[in-house]
Structures are given as C-alpha cells and as structure tokens.
Image (tube, rainbow, N blue to C red; front, side, top):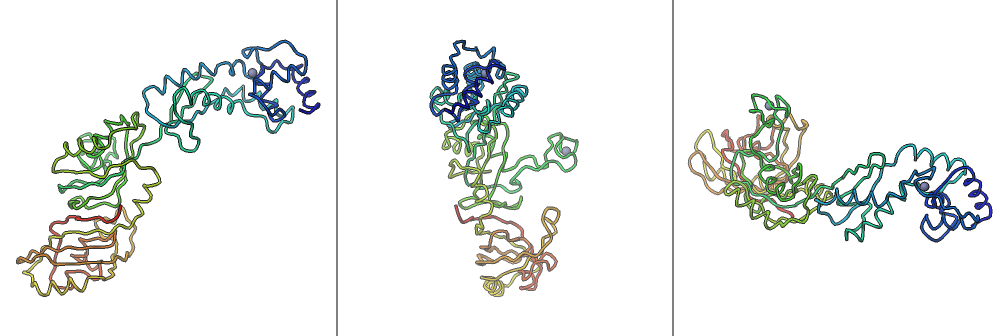
Length: 404
Ligand SMILES: [Zn+2]
Ligand SMILES: [Zn+2]
C-alpha cells in the first residue's frame, strides 16, 4: 500500500465515521489480501486508530454491512417452497447510500472501489452456497433472489422450466394453441361464455394441465414444431413441442409420471411421448427445423374418379416444386406471398367412386388442402387441375413428422 493511500484514508476518516467494511471496500485495490472488513482493520492499525466504528454508526452504510445475516434469513424463507439447483443474489440498495458512495468516490477520485451492492450480493451468495447446498450461477440461474434493503423485501425471478416431447392428436377439431376471443380480446364476453377464449380446448392446455399441477407453475407457453389444421389429426410418432412452464415451484418432477398421468387423462384425445427436460435455446431449433411431414388425405371429387389417371397424376407430383400463394383461410395472419414447396412423395392408396385416399410427403409448410383443391388457381400445379375434376380434402391426418 502506498503512503499516499494511507494519507488519503486518514483525511477521509477525519471527515467521516466509517465502519471497517466500508473503509476496506473503498481501498480494496490498494491492499491485496483479506475481506473488505480485514482490509479496513489493517488500514486502521496502520493509522494507530484504536476506536473501531460499529456499522450502525457508519456514515456510509448506516449498518447495512451488519445486516447480511438478516438478509440471508429473509431470502432463505422466501426460497423455502421453491426447488432449484442454481441461484443468484441481487440487491436494490437504498438510494441515499448509493449517493453517498458516489460522493466519496468523486472526492477521492477512486475509480476501482467496489460498490456496496456488489459486496452485499457476493457475501450473501458466499454464505448461502454451502448453507443451501446449491450453486451460484451468474449467467443462467434457476432462481434469482433480489433483496430490497430499503424495504426489507425479497422478490424472486424464477426461470421457466422447459419440457420437450412429441404429441399425437387423435381427435379432430382441436386447435394446437390457445387464442384469445376475438371480440373481447380475452377479457370475457357473452360470445365466449366469459372464458376469454376462442376455443374451449386446445392441445396446449390439455398437455399443460398436469405439468402445471406437478410443477405448481403459474402459466405456460406452448412451442410446437409447426402446427396441423384444427380439423386434422396428428398421428404417427407425433409432432415435437416444447412446453414452457412459468414460475415453477417444483423443477425436479418425474417426467415418466407426467407422461403416464397425462396420457391416462386424455385417452383417445391426445397422447404425449419422449418427454425430457429442455431449454430456451431449443425452442428456436424446433421452430426453425424444416421437418418433413407425411399426410394421409381423404379427398372427395365432384365426379367419379379414374384410378389409372389419378395414379399418373400422383406420380407426376413426386419431386415436383409447387408454388402456393397464401391461402384465403390464413390470409389474416400470414403475409401474402408465393411460397415454393417440394412434394417428395404422392401415392394413391385407394379409389372408391368419388373418394380417394392418398399419402403425401411434403416439405414443411406446404398447404395440403390447397394442393388438392387448387384454391382458385392460387396453388400451381394442383391436383384438381391435373385430373380435370374439382376435388377437395374431406379428411386430413398428419401421419409422420420427421426429425427430433
Ligand atoms: Zn459502513
Ligand atoms: Zn369474448
């Protein structure tokens, strides 16, 4: 420590009564070893000052540095009902203390003094880590506890819990995600029977119900890898999704139990599988992934179908790039533009009068109903035009979504 620093410290102590912790913190860069309190004690010894100043008489912190154990008790209590592996401590320090701190830095032209806020956060974390047997994680904690020192109040910021899985939808007429009622925008009105919702049940809410119970979360978001039409079933190995549970109290839930109980409650409606814990980053992956889809299409023609002709048309669509202008039925939520999509496979399974069943394997994002009907020439080429008879989709199932 330089003699100049000691002189600075001496002048400072003539003006202000400071506790050891605050004194040490101001000069922490000048002394290499020890805690801030030890550094403060050392300076005082060098200056032959015998009178130790109690924290509650300290001009700067007004006793704050003595309250660490009190804050720890408050935080521990607040955390009691939460399950977590990693945590982080934050704090909101009384404004007048922070102002005084800045005032001292300016007077002393100290640039690398430690803010009291950092000391409080670090000291609480250091004691809580072994006490709770949990790890401090700065970039990505499960839970962050913020102590407001002026009001003696702890607020928690809880990271969402992410669960990956695949779902099969065995019943038609269920939309994937919840939509607010378009009349009241979610407030509740006569039209939506005061539910605020456009649809009574959704894949999202059916799957989330048990997960919210087990985690005691407050809300959820559902992220699907694409979506099927409301009237289409989702079969095969199912569609990948990530369920985001907000503010969960329990994180270490038994996923096989969740899977079993969900499937038991939703028999013949929804079935989930392949559950595992996930993270926020994976949402982007499953949303962006161009998973190939295979559909089973029951189509209905305006006149009886000729099987040979239909098979030829199906063959001509294999490997074909089609152009689709945004369909009328989704125009209100999608940009009006031409999308090019590849048809990997098109096979006729059966033909019976005006009804035919075909299997279609397409690039993700293909509008299958429009590929069959032509949608007033908005999709080119299309099945109706190729066989010369107007056709439409009667029933649609997604029978496979490729990719993890
Ligand atoms: Zn102090
Ligand atoms: Zn409404």
